[in-house]
Length: 328
Image 1 (cartoon, rainbow, N blue to C red):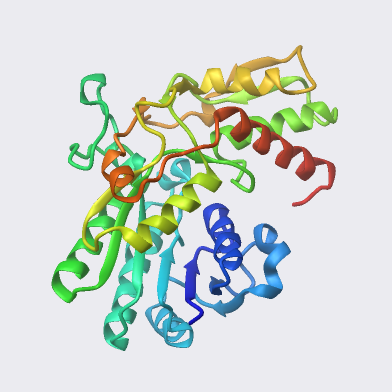
Image 2: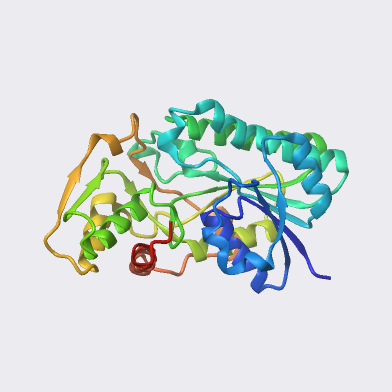
C-alpha cells in the first residue's frame, strides 16, 4: 500500500527536502499551503507532484478540513515561524503559529479519530544559555530559553507530550540542532554569509560581509542527513519520548567566524572585509549548542555522513545560482 505523507511547512527549507525524500520513496505527498501567501520557490521542481491543500495552520476549521481531506499515515509537522530574531517583535504571532497551530493539528486528529504517526521537530534553541560545564546537552538538560521563539517551541513540545499521554496520539518528539544546506533562507547565518559572498562575486555589493556576533559555537548537519534522520525517527522512535538529532560532541565544533573564513576560502574573492553590525545581533544570544545524540543513534543506527566542506559548498553554490538567476 502506498503511504500517504502530510508535510505541513512543505514550502520551507526542511519541508521541501523532506518532500523530495518522500516522493523518491514512492509515497503520496500532501502539503499545506497558504492561499496567495506561501512562497513556492523551494518546491517549484516538484509542484505538480504534490497534492496541495490550502490551509491556515492557525485556523482550527481549516486544519480539520485539511486533515480530513488528506487522511495521512504519517505527518511531519514542520509549519512554524523559525527565525529567532523577529520573534522579539512578534511573540504573540510566533505563539499562534508554533503552539496554537500544533494544538489545532492535534485536535483535528483527535476529533477525526485517526491515528497517524506524527513527528514534532523542536529546536536546540530551547536549551538557551548553556554553560560549558553543562555540555554536551542531553534530553534531560535543563531548558533556559532566552528568546520568544524558543519559548514557543518548548510550549509546542509540552503540549505534544500532553496529547500523547492523555489521548494516546502517536507523537514522536525530536529536537534538532543546527542544520544547513540549499534552500535555507538567507535571514539565517550561513546562508546570509553565502548570499553576500555570491553577490560580491558578481560585483553586486562592496567586498564587505556584514555579520552579527560570530563567536557562538555550533556543529552542523547537512539537510540531507537531517531528512534521513527525520524519516528514521517517525518510523522507529517511540511515541511520547524525546530524541536529540544532529551532529554531536564527536564532530568538530566551529564558531561562526570560522565558518565565514571557510566560505571565503572556497569563494572567488580573497580581499574581503568582515564587519559586525549591531542590527544583525540578537538581544540575547545562545553561546554554545553541542548535543549528545547517542539515544537516537543507538535506536536507529543513524549518523551524519556529510562533512562541513560539502555543507558549505552546497550552500554557496545554491546562492550563486540564486543571485545569477535572480530567483526572488
